[in-house]
Image (tube, rainbow, N blue to C red):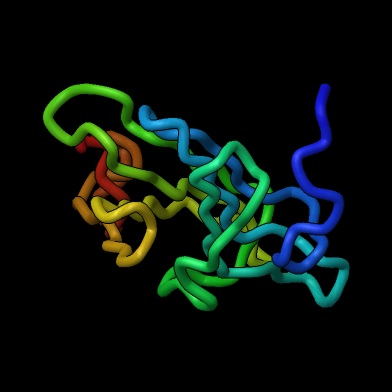
Amino acid sequence: WVLQTASAPWTPRKFMGAAADDQGHLFVAGGYDGTGSGGLSDVWRSEDGGKTWSVVLRAAPWTARHSHSLTPLLGGAAKGRLYILGGSDGRLMHDVWFSDDRGATWTLMRFTHTRDLRYTVREDRASWTP
């Protein structure tokens, strides 16, 4: 292991989303800084292996959260797309957000599904189709 920076500019945190894209850019999104029951909603990017970081968004449109997944698509029709999936903002989340511009803008994915075949209740949920 090689320390890339002793003090990144983002708030100290845990339970954040972290990912690398197909160009080697690193991303950090959200997380928990020890205050309250929610989390953070910022997005940061490094283009030099974590030596320097720049803020992409200080407040993304998804709720401030921790314990979520941040996942890039490394191929296919939506190559480079980033996803934020689930997590907790003080309550368990089951939403999916995507960004096609390296975290600058985010869109909530929606679809309607039947919760269970024996129920007729319909809910808006996040789509799993990129």
